[in-house]
Length: 222
Length: 222
Image 1 (cartoon, rainbow over the protein chains, first blue to last red):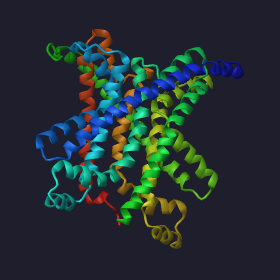
Image 2 (cartoon, chains in turn green, red; image 1 turned 90 degrees about the horizontal axis):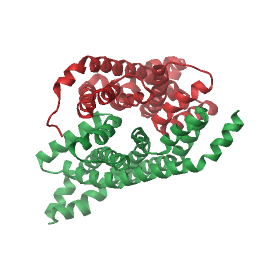
Image 3 (cartoon, one colour; image 1 turned 180 degrees about the vertical axis):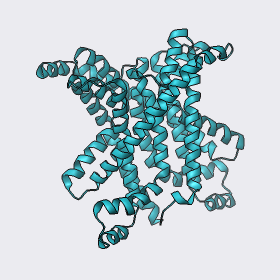
Image 4 (cartoon, chains in turn green, orange; image 1 turned 90 degrees about the vertical axis):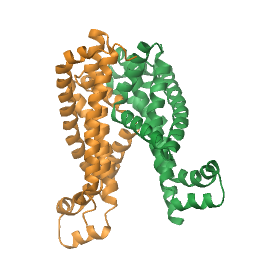
């Protein structure tokens, strides 16, 4: 029986590849949007305005304190009652971008705060504008602390994207779920699902630990 | 969006939410205990002298960390019956959560152990302590003390991850929101209430984490 189901599984491989594509599309879009929003919010959170700091802090807490599944449901079911009709795909991208942005915001803010204060003061006394300070003095140094957790966050993003299958986005997990109704060998089907996720995530995990090693060595050298 | 927010429905469903809140608490509490235990064992195996044992633990940790929890959950949910193992849903859910968080705890504990000076372990060996005595009296107290914050962070993640159990029809907080949505078609009331309950757990754990950082007991024990 295993052999028969295995052949069936091989035959539905194109379906799985479509799922991989969907996972990559959802996480890729959210990665770009989340990074942009996250960096802006992170810079503001480490900035001077107290009101902005408090507002962003509260937003981060709410996003961090609730499960992603609940956030997906809120975007998918509640926004329509506010008059914003969304298909599953944009709803998934919005929810995932929001989640990623909140985590990246914290990473960026703590990276910026890890830059010694003297650097900023030196930049101010050299007459750099605050944009120039950020661009040429603070960010290049902060990136060293930001990069390793940032890549780690991208891995989490790909894994969290599996949750959007709950609102019917046909990603790898959803394909597995649909296939298992037809091929009742859960171990085989979800083994394949796991392998596909592994293929997508593993290079990023390695990149993350490589960066972590490299960046720490650089800090010691300073 | 919030005009016509129906508090009476929430009051009516409050007993259900209370029940589900408790369910989330004990499901994640049970998984947390299991996960810490699995984490300690997997970590001890990872750092073992024997290469085979170390490799086996490495494979476990890496494969868990590079696949999403939802895929693992479905793997056990659909996979165990096809092996002829019939378990109630909640047992499957707790197993998946335990094994998932266990891998993360193994890594957290490992980073704690590797921060301990080698001299301490050598001193333990030369005082004639056995492996278990060294673990119990020298390594673990320090490692647990140093890693209390990341461990609480992972506990928060675990509680949030328990929301995925609703997808294999276990009754917990997220399921309560879904019930309200399907019985009364009130997703706004349903999921926002769910989110509030999760935030309660989140803020409690966060407060505990901040408190524990201030306490000297939990800082480096030496």
